[in-house]
Length: 136
Image 1 (tube, rainbow, N blue to C red):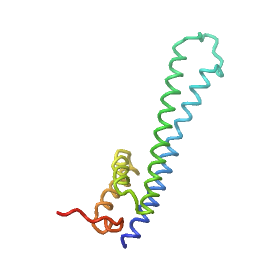
Image 2 (cartoon, rainbow, N blue to C red):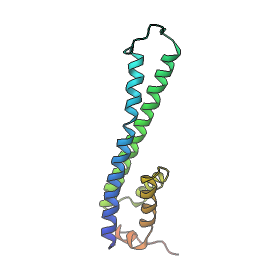
Image 3 (cartoon, rainbow, N blue to C red):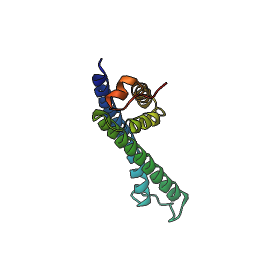
Image 4 (spheres, one colour):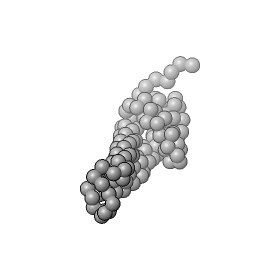
């Protein structure tokens, strides 16, 4: 494959994995929904007091779910943005950083991150970005 084709495949892969990050991050909305429903009293429970431990657990449930959603969506958006920048041959260092972050997320993020780091380190790809390779 030519360097242009490799970068196009890498950009599409960023779009797909970014979408998966956002999708899987959305599963936290289930926790948020249940936590908020318990806090609003939508589940009847005669023994519940206004400040019972289940209220604290419901709040924690909703907060942790919100953090999961925010992290998933943020990572998804950043990964998609990295794919867009790869397609436009801009911000190679940004894409390297996003690839390194993705390495921590098994299995798709790790695969994408490794291929991103390897591909964006090649001299032919660096020249494709209009940069000159670093001297040895």
